[in-house]
Length: 197
Image 1 (cartoon, rainbow, N blue to C red):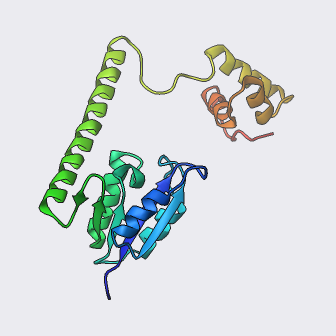
Image 2 (image 1 turned 45 degrees about the vertical axis):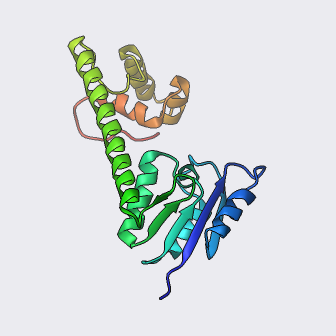
């Protein structure tokens, strides 16, 4: 099967014009151009998803700038790795990156190392923060939605039979799951299971 060159263009809103990107991609020899009108922060973009479905081994994907393709370094690397696994080459015209060349491969390896470094730093800072909080007697995780007194009140209202779990949840502005947890904490030992009355 003959290899194809697909171009990908993106603008953030329908008010923006993708024509300059389309012209550059056409000049680069793209057989077909996919255009999304969507924020780069969106995980799924219809035309990008369609292009990914159509790409085959030996094809090439071209974009005008890296930020047109990926919403973050991690997302960009994930896409490039996906291309690599599929046997698809990638080219960015502005940055002059081409994964068919050793220089292009080197640049993406550097990007990958930087992304991993960033993830490691975030993990290290998070762990240090949790350790410092534990040293001060605080536990990690979400703060309790209900105070100890409110938990007792939840049990009293529920056992009184005048309010449903949903009504109690609405009263305290919490989810039903939070109410069930409160009931579980204050459950008297014995048979039976809490039911949503």
